[in-house]
Amino acid sequence: MTALSTPRTVTKQAATGSLTGLALGDALGFPTEFNDVPQILAKCGPWREMRLPTPAHVTDDTQMTLAVARAVRTAMDRGLLTASRLLRPLREEFTAWYHSPDNNRAPGRTCMTACMLLDDERLPWAEASRIDSKGCGANMRVAPMGLAPGLSTEQRAGAAQLQSALTHGHPTALAASDLTARAVFLLACGAEPTGLVGRLRSYAYESRTRYHERWLGDLWTRCDDPTPQAFIARGWDECLAALDRLVTAVRTPSPETDPCLTTGDGWIAEEALATALQCFLLFPEEPVTALRRAACTRGDSDSIAALTGAFAGAHLGAGAWPQEWAERIEYRGDLVVLGALWDS
Image (cartoon, rainbow, N blue to C red; front, side):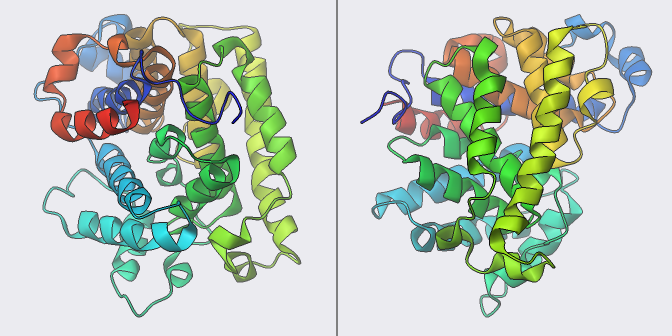
């Protein structure tokens, strides 16, 4: 078994830290989504002093992350994680979320449309997938794939892409979800933040023409690409371009500048990844400051901050977060139970 086969979560509780951080970022960014920075500053005061709202409600980002986490737990309780074993619990969790009365947090149109179609069990899942969508709904929820222990690289990548494909089938959504899960996994394993982007770029190059047919089936045929390799390469190329912009941004960091100006507003998957990574890398040992920077952005602030929290919590563990914040976050019980399962 390699050193990166299973996250080192026993002492730092990376899973609990990552899931809690994701929810905290989501709640912090919820009130600032759809606002530009001047509006946020007028509403919240200086960004470095932003307070967790009361009550600390989250959005569909956290709700769907929990849905993915429960689906992975169910699938792994039944044996080795495979596409066939994961597909049904994912589909059931997504449709349960679709029908939930708590699904009232401005959910994305792509997720709602796809989940409505997934609710028809006669319809193959690939026909529900929105093949043209690469919205950040694909990877805002993928952190559990980076936290579940004992997965091979192929399992983690395939599962990350499959959970995206059920709603967001664009190759960039698949690749960005894979990369996001990879970043969470590496940080949970103890990877140093300074080398993280380089490792992600190498992983992207290695994965560029690898189509996970066992997980995705014939999804690629729903586009005009001549081969499955050409299909998935489009996604990895867009993600590599986003990582290139991130490299430039972190080379000359500017903490007081809205990160969206350099790596994008985060409404699409590759930008959500790059901008969240930038916020994390600006303050790798100051997780609350990283969340506040992410929440004070002109773009999809709740998703950017949620991913920032997932990265920071995977890196620093459960102790990263103020106890007063962690104890009153919505869905606290679910987050702790799922985190403890993978921290043990």
